[in-house]
Length: 101
Image 1: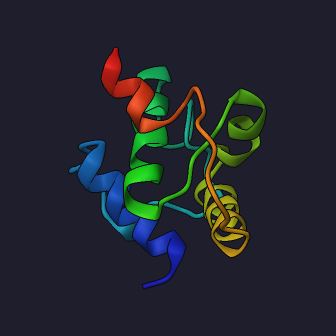
Image 2: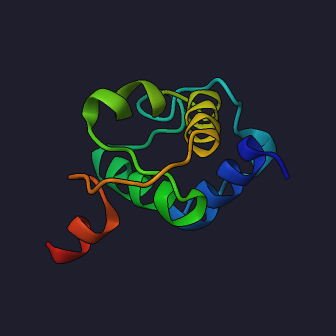
C-alpha cells in the first residue's frame, strides 16, 4: 500500500469518516473546507495521526500549512521526512506535548 492509500485508510478510521471510502477521496481534494470538510479540531488530530502512523512530526504551522493541503501534499511531506529521517527534536506539535494538555 502506498503512502496516499495508507493516509486515506488512516483518515477514514481515525477521523471517523466512515461514510467515505478510499475511492471517494481524491488525492488532490482539499483536506479542509470544501474538500473533505475537516476542521481545526481535525487538524490537531491529523498531526497526531501522522506521527502515530508514519513516525513524522509536523513541527509548526509554517511546516504544517503546506503539508495539510491535500492527500498528495501530505503524502509528499511524509515521504520527504521519512527519507531524511534523523534524530527528531521536540516540537510544540509532538504527541507528548498534546498528551500533557
